Image (tube, rainbow, N blue to C red; front, side, top):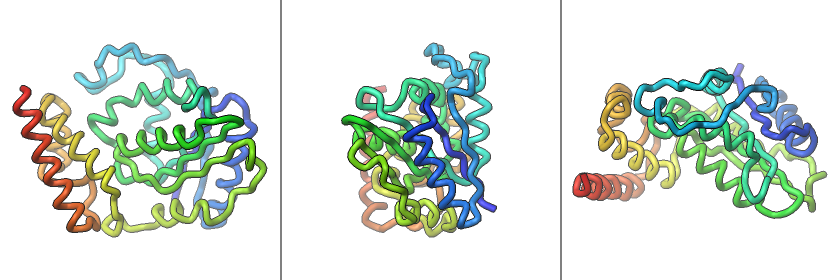
Length: 244
């Protein structure tokens, strides 16, 4: 059975949480197990910017963040959600995301499908959904769909069609996945930075065998995308090397 983790980042179990529950019921009809966690049930301290996780690979802060990260790694797919607070994600979620910085340098959830959900009673819905999708790409994840609700349609039930791509990608063989150009471009950026910074970042990428690749997975990549992203990677490497 496929297993999905749904992350609720609102202290209230109303609008955003209600959408999670609806998606959970749809996924369970496809024999997909969904575990819901509420970030407010965990101790999540602020990142202190010490860079210990980047340089040494471990975080010096003692709280529940590493447990949540391990839970994310253990699942086949993730539902990442937030209410809109001042045109962006909730403070609780942003604090957690800050603590996952090492996943940008050394991706550990690459290839996992992510469904992003956001709700608002005002503005900022599109911006928040876009931000969540950027986080997914920087983690090496796969954007598998977005669901948004505003004050105008908050009572509209989640349709099966809104979850179809997530379900499809959960069941898709990795070799059949077609990454977006944005995902391929981000891979190049992360790869070049890892080589530039050296240390455990470079070692991690070498260990994964990614240094000569154009994406984390051996998958279905359009030839034109291959040419474009390879050219971009070579250009970026020259720029970084020149400015050493």
